[in-house]
Structure formats: structure tokens, C-alpha cells
Image (cartoon, rainbow, N blue to C red; front, side, top):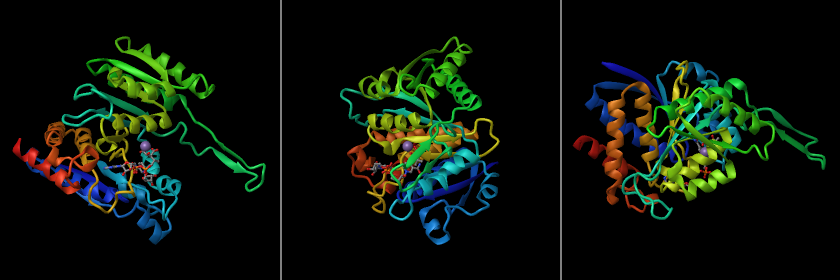
Length: 357
Ligand code: NAD
Ligand code: IPM
Ligand code: MN
């Protein structure tokens, strides 16, 4: 019997609501597909933990988690009690960096029965993957504040692009494109304005493309690319971007497919030296937290990606079929998708569809 050790890290806000929903779906799959998940509940990496301990995680967090097969994560952030840069850099960003999860894989798909805010788009029209660089770029610790509090106050934050870091994310994106039917890659750039780092990015894209003659590729400046997401999302297959560009595109893409509530994310170490982390793209949503109305599909889809990563691709596909079935029924959709279901009810519908298949 196949057994995987998982740490479940719900975090804050709706993270605490959608993660148990995803866990219930996972539980329903293991019975059917002959594997077992050994899930350890993690009570740190939350703003509550910070309030009690003055830090987001225990000092030995890395030791506690590095032996796990995967991490299932909810969302962190409660800005009323802990500033976001402290809570996020003390948890999620640490996981990504310390576990070298350099690929952020973020599928964007218009699901059956879901209405896109863009006119005349139907299921099948929008289906691409954002590949976001996840460990360097604009998210750097290089910089500082000088002459604080004076009128000479000066703040610097550098963008860091390494050859290794740039090439490995581009290689991953080209490999991914090469394995997809359309074999198309789009690179997010801004080499007209950000005139040091982005021309370098373009140069590395061009160099990497030489190794993938079957992949057709193009690039857009990020401002135009954002517009293209809205005007003509059907053109995209694999979209690769730096840390910040990828972050922005991976909220915009899902918004074009109805809601960010369904979008999943894999934070992946392709070399498997460390556990990879799977989470919804969305945050802790303080505006709806505690009401039980959050859409759990992003977390459930992320759980499916986790199973795929663990090699349980049949179970992963079964979850996605169940998600599609439940989404096509208005009664099982949450309010962000115009339905009336609550978080638990939406997860129940997925589990019902799973059991009925
Ligand atoms: P957010 O994603 O939490 O919310 C944005 C909007 O989308 C809100 O109106 C929210 O109600 C809605 N929304 C998000 N997820 C939803 C779901 N599952 N179902 C229905 N509606 C949903 O982004 P924000 O408001 O910018 O950030 C809130 C907090 O979350 C901040 O502390 C932020 O730093 C943090 N955050 C954390 C993560 C993460 O842990 N991965 C990601 C993004 C933001
Ligand atoms: C995401 C989030 C995080 C990011 C924040 C919360 C640090 O927006 O996972 O997309 O910018 O990476
Ligand atoms: Mn984001």
C-alpha cells in the first residue's frame, strides 16, 4: 500500500475553511484508489501563532517539514494583527525559498458551466498555464531604507535575476510547452522600460528557445500582455514570467475564468530535493472569512495537483472530473460563481460526484 506523508498548513482566514474541504476530498479518493495519506495538521504558519509566539513558525520548522512528501497549504495573512510582509515572509515565502520551489505552476481554465466575465467565452476557450518564477526576481531581500524619516529618505529594492534561476524556470516552461498539443510559449517582458533585467530575461528566452525548435514562442510587454489576457485569452498555451509578473497574471487569468476562488497553484521543486507545496492562488480573504462561504475549488484543485505530483494521476484526474461535474450544476456552485452553495456544500458536491463516478 502506498503511503504519503503530508503536512496540512491551513494558515489564516478562509485558509482554515478551504483546506479541510480539500482534505475531505482527498480522503474520499484514497479509499477508491488504494493509497493512504498520512496527514499531519500544522498549527504554525498563521497570524494566531504569531500573536502567541512573536514569530510565524517555530525555529525548527524546516526540520519538521523537510521529510514530508508534500505540503498542502491554505492561505496566510491577517493584516489587522500582523503586517502582511511579516506574516508572508515568515511563512509562505520561506517555504518557497528554503525548499527551492522555483516553479509556481498556475493553470487557468474556463470550467464547464462557469461564466467568464469576458463576453462570449465558453468552456474550452480559455485553457493555459502560467509558469511563474518563484524564488528570485522582484521578490528580493536586496535593498534598504536610508535617511529614514528625513526628506532625504531613500528606498531601494533590487531585482535579482541569476543565470541559473532564469534558465531553470525557462527550461521548465519550454519543456512543459513541448509536451502540450499546441506547443506554444509566451514570455512576459518589459524590456522597453526595465532596461537592465528584462533585456537579460529576453536574451535567456531566446537562448533557451534554440533547444526547443518545435515550440513556437512570442513575447509581450507585461502591460500589453495584461490587455491580451482580457482581449484574446484563447491565444495562450504556456505563459512564463518573472516572480512579480507571474503573480499578477495568475490573479488576472483566473478572474477572466470567473473567479480567483477556483485557481490552484503548485510550488514545485522539480528536482524533488524538498517537498513541494500546493495551495489555492487566492489569499485569506478577510472580507468573507468566518462566514463559511469561500469557494473551496482552488484548494481542491491544488489537492489534485498534489496527487499528480505524488504519482497518483488517476486519483488526481478523478478529482478534476468531479470538480467539473459539480461546477456544471448551479446548486453546487458558491456565491462568487453566482450559486448558493457554501464552502462545505460545494465540497460535498465534489465528493458526491467522485463517489458516483
Ligand atoms: P485575496 O485573494 O485574499 O482576496 C481577494 C478577493 O477575492 C476578495 O474579495 C476575496 O473575498 C475574494 N476571494 C478570494 N478567494 C476566494 C474564494 N476562495 N472564494 C470566494 N472569494 C474569494 O487577496 P487580498 O484581499 O489581496 O489579500 C488578503 C490577505 O491574504 C492579505 O493578508 C494577503 O497578503 C494575503 N494573501 C495570501 C496569499 C497566500 O497565502 N498564498 C495569497 C494572496 C494574498
Ligand atoms: C501569491 C501571493 C503571494 C505572492 C503573496 C501573499 C506574498 O500573492 O501566492 O500569489 O505574491 O507570491
Ligand atoms: Mn498573488
